[in-house]
Image 1 (cartoon, helix red, strand yellow):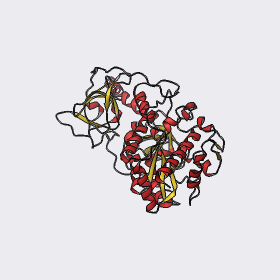
Image 2: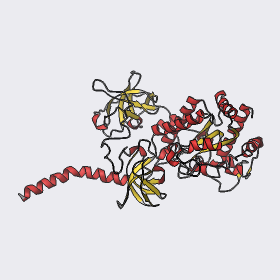
Image 3: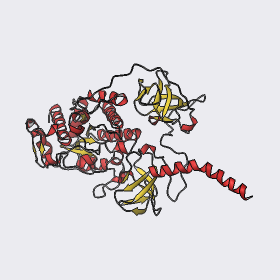
Image 4: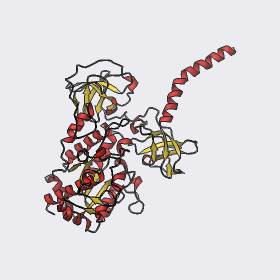
Length: 490
């Protein structure tokens, strides 16, 4: 009897071992640390249950759909609940899209067990046993399941596809466009599957599509290493975009319409993360700490935006703060209670400071925490709200640089999302990706997040713009504001 019982126990342990191993790995991969004292809530919009201190180790169990809130518990299991994603630091290699979506309310009914980030209802409904989906980004279509395989074409964003199979790991799909225009392999992370279909439901296949002639590697400017594959294709597109935008008639119309309706022609708001929050970005201009060198023609533009009711260069508002993401800008939970309690930071500053222009730099932090679809939806919401309020949005592309642990691809893809939104609304884009490409270290610090800075409380446009990312950024913003004033006649 004892031997039979012992055998049963061993069988159970063997069956559970893979599950326990995966669970342990998931917990380890989702370890994080708080970077502030946080309110812990029952759900993202729910009541406060507790507080958790700064530098407290936590384990992240799940996230909400937008990725701006995570469900966590402290490592000692003393506290459990929802906290804002922006105030949690976790391992760089853990992407927000790999964290499962959950709707659990602490103290309420448990969330459905199989809710995941990619299982959405907007994908087409399957017929005849087919698995279907929709692309959430413009994708390279490859001959096999990996970036080492040559691209045989591209498929656009929001295209309906039929998923024929997957590779063993499930990170690549063999698919064809619903209209039959292209067939091949795409990365599964950029495909919305039809509702209720798990990766494991899709059969494993090993088909190889006849490849096209491989493209030659593309070298952009003086980048330290040649790019190839997906990065090269996107780099070539980004390099073709002018640094200083051509100010369209529509952009001028938005700006003038705002002025006609009472908006302050001399006031712009800054929208961004810790890069924008720094006084090294525009703030030194507002303080008069600069020399223009050969760019003296920009002096009237500085005076115009510094001498209104608000010095637009110095004022950072709540839309330009460390930790900001595209999602937090439009979330009322992040309202500053001193100004507009219960109102999203963006809406608050539109109403409170009455700007006619908004200069936006968001994406460097987002690419480490949210997925492509969330970024697109949030950025489009920001632009849409600004245009609806007759405030001219000016988007800014982010720089990228090679790094062995963090490819440039996602940053480039986020830049392409901004370009698509700019095209939809016909608004200006400052191409800082191209502007700093020839600078040392691509104008970026080693954290791959912040621009390089001279360390001086003085901006030198007599050579510093060719050395430091922040200096170059200031210069390109001034040039864009100058171009807008010229086009609008103000």
